Length: 499
Image (cartoon, rainbow, N blue to C red; front, side, top):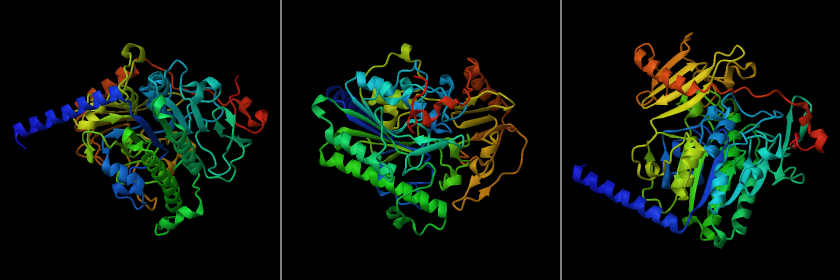
């Protein structure tokens, strides 16, 4: 490509972005965000997976595929980053997920993505998984900027009876329609219920009153491995039992995405809607997911735990059907959606954002303003050596414990150091007592060569960046389990118990 041609191409793309901003100022687009739970790098067929995902494939192939997109190693931290534009470390949420019965959540002094969009005239709806706190009503979705909520507060539950059991005997239904308990959906598959709720919202929406933002956080494909029999038909050729069920679960979600996009088209809303698709963390390979050929799984800071499947679709975007290779993080969604897509303004002093407005980079593949990503920072505590990981340019440094082996319940196949094949066999690297890993992710995306000893200056520079973030010394330790949360105190329903 000649310099003149390249200049002309960039000028044309810039003109498209300007026109997009002008059109946004006139009519804000609807925003539909799909958040998949524990979806792995190798779980969609557009990436070569053995699982057919035709609806997801069509949107991805016609959209913008984010190839260097990062999430956190677990779900609560990623969801917090999406809704606040901040690193989980800065929220005190880097240590792990918000466990059932723990009296804390996304800090109440944080304004959310839903709050900002609502101020900008959007109708805001949350469907599916919350997992950002429920000890008080103030932590729940309809108190965090969402007009409506239809889903569950905790991190997991049964797909059919919607029951969550913890601490052996603490058991109850976790299902709400806004704040009202839903107790009449026993036997109905949650993925289908959540799809039907999104369809209801779209059918009832009055576009004359403004656009919508629908945060659709499917329960799929988090364990337990459960799916209706009808979804197994296209999964029978998969020889591994767990992956076969996982396949059926993902097929149900793919069908839901197909039904929702078809409804948008039938109602003449699809061309006025931006669709965002993302996982919350890497796949849990112990329950049928695959991150191959990436190393590790959910709950590790290897690429298999933090490199996320994601794409953006919109028929009016200036450039479509390409692989975006810019560095992007889950915390970028808030400024990208609010400023880039919705055309609203953010008070940077008020927000203290860690995320960037990536819309110009996403839509044109121009260079990202982001040069580094803090993948995790959980300082040493209670005998734990700590865990830190950062990506700076081509380099990625892991310091401390790279996985979740410090938690006895998660040792072994739930937290691999190596590469997990489709049959769930684990290819382990040679043992090393080192607590420092350095990888050139551009040259070695599967993290097979630890080059820390070869590049001590790079290790030093990246550790200095970690220490920069750690200078605030924010506690990441969650409070202990509170037995007062027992659903038996609230008619057998998980309910905010501190109000």
